[in-house]
Image (cartoon, rainbow, N blue to C red):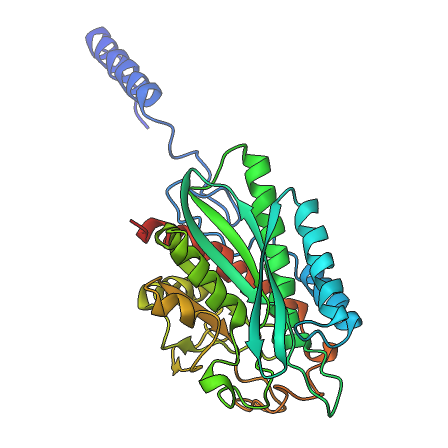
Amino acid sequence: MFSIRNPILLIIAALMLACADGASSSRPAVENTPAPTAGAEKPETEDKTKTTTAFDGERAFNHVKAQVEFGPRPAGSPAIEKTREYIVRELKSYGLKTAFDEFAEDTPRGKMKFKNVIAELPGESPNAVIIASHYDTKPFKEFAFVGANDGGSSTGALLEIARVMAAENQNAGRKRKFTYWFVFFDGEEAFCHEWDECLNGNDHTYGSRYMVERLRKEKQLGRVKAMILLDMIGDRDLTVPREEGSSQWLVEAIWGTAGQIGHVKEFPDRPFSVGDDDHMPFLRAGVPAVDIIDFEYGSSPKDNDYWHTKEDTLDKISPRSLKIIGDVTLLSLPKIEAQIR
């Protein structure tokens, strides 16, 4: 301890103290700012990738349930007519315009009438992206085939995708970049027991083949820039390998999105070939197309022993699986649209 008795020294000391106070008052008060805590708001530059959508798995499941309650729904049956009425009623309730592809074709059971259902969500461009399913079930004499997964699940998911996309447009008050067609194909299933058994291998995919030919004749096929097919996607143990016949850029967009939002297990990075399905007529016509299909629908992993059997029933279908398919499909669309020229 000491004291300053010289006046000059006292003045100098006072000036030094004043400067010190001034410096202290002008210094940014960062020392007193509390450190960020867990759960605090994050910077706006952070990646805000969506991992879910408004797709409701329970609503999609209820659509599957309604179809199953109609019973077997082979092309030309009273039950498929009831299913078609149900589909149209739902689509109209979403504010979507619907139309039909009505046509007749020779089949192993004679001349049959078919009806594709098409709903349109207009976009800024007349060029279109198709999201599709088939809504018929394979005819069997031996048992009542209700097709909960094969026909029912993809149709239920497509109805819910259409609802979500129509609501988004209405809420946003603006159109999407491209027009979307939600297409429900009739006559995907073969009438004969085996896929290629009859009509020189053409006893299947009646609806998709007809639509491609109609668009070609009307010189409208060039409007279709991509086609996304859903088939057999309700399995509780959902497994959708990359369908190697599909257009690679569409596969990368969809499977890449699945990985980003945490569904690598359900969309494994391994190849699989379905051979033929409703996407193939579009591929053969030069339209990029992809098949999202779980062909491992069985009593154990990688088995397919429920397919085209009486075991394809509602208890095998999961709202969670439908939700995953809906989310992945919807969240893939911006990537797909960005690559269309």
